[in-house]
Image 1 (cartoon, rainbow, N blue to C red):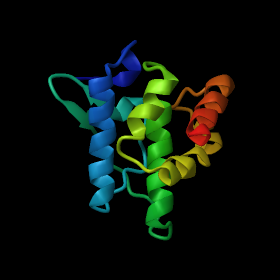
Image 2: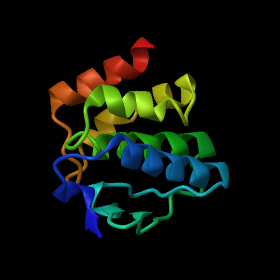
Image 3: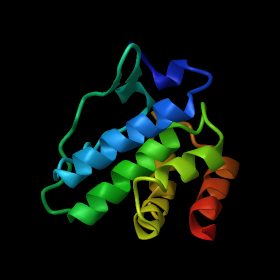
Length: 130
């Protein structure tokens, strides 16, 4: 398996599989805390690896929003932004996505996620427009 950071293009099926995995984790009260392109592995199967431990004091809603923001940003280099948002909408509510959009400035500051200003701004506009 190889990380999505080494892939130029990811299919909608793989994108939706990964988003679905994250949604399933969240529905079970499991929050990753360190989603980044290197922790999403593609091969014969798809894996989300290296699950971290988010602050005990953060609410589940904030943990979910941060995870989702990191995951959406992780796919920016290999998927169309419209596809990322439309796929996420199949698994997360509008309010979940808007909460994730609130974390995009913080996610952009991570050294392990490449999220240029123009893509970040457009991603936020897409999330907030529908």
